[in-house]
Length: 573
Ligand code: 6R9
Image: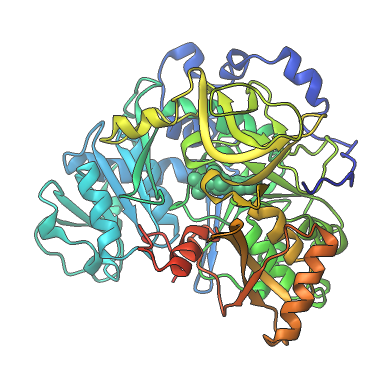
C-alpha cells in the first residue's frame, strides 16, 4: 500500500466550513432545508430555487450565467434567466408536455441548452441530458429505454435522432437559425420569443423526478439513474462547504451537462448558492482554458484529473503567461487525483487541488477535501457532514484501517438516486447489504479517517496473492518524466493469477524503446514496490477514455484479452 505521510495544511482564512469535526457532530439536514422557501410554502421546484428565488430577491440584477465560446459571448442576470426559463417552459407546455414526461437535451453547451434544461424542470418534466458527441445508437438506447416524449437538439445533430424507431417521441424541438421545420418539429428560439415571460411553475413533491442521467456499466445497456428535486438540499450544502461558494465568487465548472458533474455542479450547486456561473463552450485547449480563468476572473474552478494532467503536460511556461491570481479554490472529480498532479498544482497554481469523490448514482459529492482541512495527497478526503462512509467486506463487516474493501455509504442521503429507470433489479444490486449503498469502488481508510481510492472492485488486481489497486501504480507511473498518462490492468497469468500490465501514452519528445520499458519498470519497483511493477508495458498514442475523462480500464482489458468491449457509447473517440 502506497501510504505517505505527506500533508498539506488546511487554510485558516475565510471559508464557509471552518471546523469539519465540529460540523459533523452538530449537523442536521433539516437545518439546511430551511434555506429554501418550500420549507414554509410547501411549493417545491429545484429550478425555482436555483433561479427565481434569487431573481425575486435583491439579486435580480446579478449575473447568473456568463457564457462564452470562440464565436459567442453573452451574460444573463438571474431575472433574465427567470424569464428565459419561463419562456422555454411555456413552449414545452404549449406542446402538451407535462409533469413526469421525459425530455432530452441533446446539444452542445449554449445558453439555450441551460434555458431548455431549467425550463423543462419548471414544468415538472424529467430531463435527460446527452453529450453532443453521442451517436445514433447511444441516443436511441436512452430515448427508447425512458420512453422520451421530446428532445431538444440542433439541426446538425438531428440525423442522430432515429425518429422512426422512437414511437413515443412526439416532439423534436430545434435550436438553430433559419430552420425549415417538418412535422412534429418546433423552433425553440422563435417560439420562446413569442412566449409569455410569466409561467405558472409546476409545484412538485420533493420526491418527484427531475433528472435522468444515463451511465454505462461494464456490460449491458446504460442505466437511467433517476434523481429527484430533494437533491437540491445536498447540491446547495456541498456548494457551500466543498466548493466554498461565497457571494462574490465567479465559478467555473468545466463539465458538460451530459455528465452528472455538469448538472449537479454546473447548474444546481452554483445557482442554488446564487453565484455567477461561467460556462465555456468549445473544445479543450490549455491556452483557451487559461484564458478563460484569466479573462473571466474565475475564483472557484471545478475540473477533472484528465484535464489537470493535460495542463500539466502542456508545461509550466504557459501558466506564467497568464494572470491566475483571482483563482482561490480548485477542485477535481471523476477519477483518482494523482499526488503528482497535486504537487504540480502547488508549484504552478500555488495552491491545493481538492479532490472530491461521488458518482452519478449518489447525485452529489460525498467524500471530499475541504479548504480548512489538512489534505493528504492521494486521499479523496472525508465524508461530508451528515453522511457516514465505511470500508466493508462482502458480508457487511466494517474493516479496520488500511484494509482494502468495498467503499460503502450508509443510506439514505438527500441526493441519492431513487431508482434505475425500468430496472428495479439493477437498483437493488447497489443495496444488497442492508443499510448500505455499495459503490462498486474499492478503497481503504487510514487511522485518521481519510479515504484512499484503489480502483473499481472489478479493476483491483491480484498478483501472486497481493492485492494491487491500479490507481497507485498509475500514479507512480505518471511521476515518470516520459509518461503523460497510464492505464493499468490485471492480465490473467497461469502462475501469478494476474500480472500487472500498463498501457502508457508518452509525453511529447519521448519515443517508445526497450530501454525506456526497463527504466519505467525500475522506477515503479523502487518508488512503490517490486510486486507493483508492471511486467508488461505497451505504448499507445492515446488511452481509451469516457467523455468525462475516465480511463476505461475495461476496454484496455477487453483489447488485451480479445473480448467484446461492452457498451462504448460514452467513449471519447
Ligand atoms: C461524479 C462522477 C463515478 C466513478 C466512481 C469512481 C470514479 C469519481 C473520483 C473517482 C477516484 C475520485 N471517481 N470521483 N475515483 N477519486 N475523486 O465521476 O460520476 O461518472 O458516475 O463516475 O468515478 O470510480 O465510482 P460518474
